Length: 129
Image (cartoon, rainbow, N blue to C red; front, side):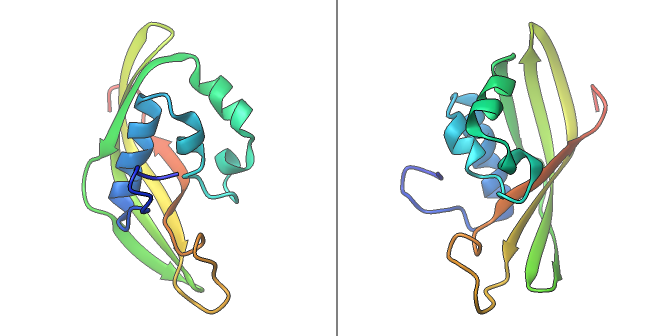
């Protein structure tokens, strides 16, 4: 799911960078696996995710700053600023926004998978922001 080393990124910004790297190289299953299963994107099937991505000729994105962390009820949330540039149906577009990630805060009952960062939302501003 994550880099070829098999190790999951330990920093939220690294997960964002790995996600956009997977999208840029057409590794849609790898990118989809980085989403929390509880998120709308994670809950949709890989076929639907891939179909949505096929309208993009290119996708580039990256973490654009440090993560802001918050904890609540055994879960840690991270908000990471992102910048995304795409070409969709031949039209280039660049947007900035925030990727929200979450992970279990190593409390009893959390699985190893739940203790890794997963995307839960990506909110992008209007075109050109």
